[in-house]
Image (cartoon, rainbow, N blue to C red):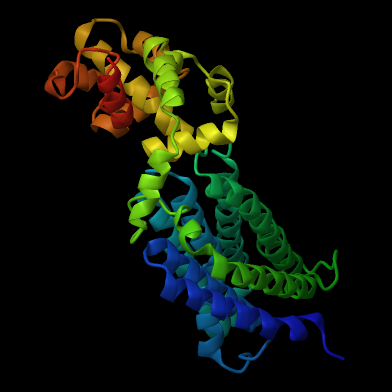
Length: 386
């Protein structure tokens, strides 16, 4: 009798291969390549569950390395998708490299020196710690999808976050977590949950088939819509008429009212301001305000939008007053000095104290706090109406 795994594993492989090829040949950029590579990692995992390469040491070794990379690849995908203007720290790459070396060493020792592989040190170094790393990256990928949901201004990406969190949650529970529990059971000679690994494989293969089929069916309709998920600097060959059609759809009266709230009433200085609060002040639906800020001003999240006003106001005060940095940070809407310092350094590549000491950027900004060079649409609009 055929098992669930033997039924759905070939189907999952075919759908994943098709999805990877569609991504590789129809979309450009690092994100598309990472998604295609993620499909390859998943194919490797499914092939391992089919036990086709049990007699091939090299085949099992290569497939194992690809399969265990999937949590790190999905983390990179989540970071590129959901963290605007983020920079991956060197410690992340070092952690991934250490994981790859540890797992590869562990499998080689298990093959060639099984007596060493049975030691507790080997189990902790080459199995338990790497499994914890996989679990940590997988969980953090889910958190990246959850974080920033409320402030996301890209409608399609905001909707995608929900699907991403649900899909990744299933992956974490069905694969990484169960795999770690299986390893602990095997090491300590326990049998708390019989056939745990087989259950994981069966469920996961069916799940992969269903999800990849769903995305393949949608892939033919994604086209331009899919590119909105990619940061502006990474998108290529966007239709020229898109920007012009968006500009025509903008209501000048709403833009003027938004300018007044942000520049005249300094609404940005209100701590904890949300896009829902701003939409209420504008008497408009929240999703329309998200679209307005995203399409007309090119901001991808609400924090970017607020930070530009806050940092511009703060930089002006740093040049024109001797007020303490902490007072300025609180005065422009930041609830934490550390958050202000990070946002300021991201903008000017120096701390607020260094900026003040150097007298930097004085010629680059207007002394009029109502004119924000960091929001070009607002500056141009106000210049025409005043």
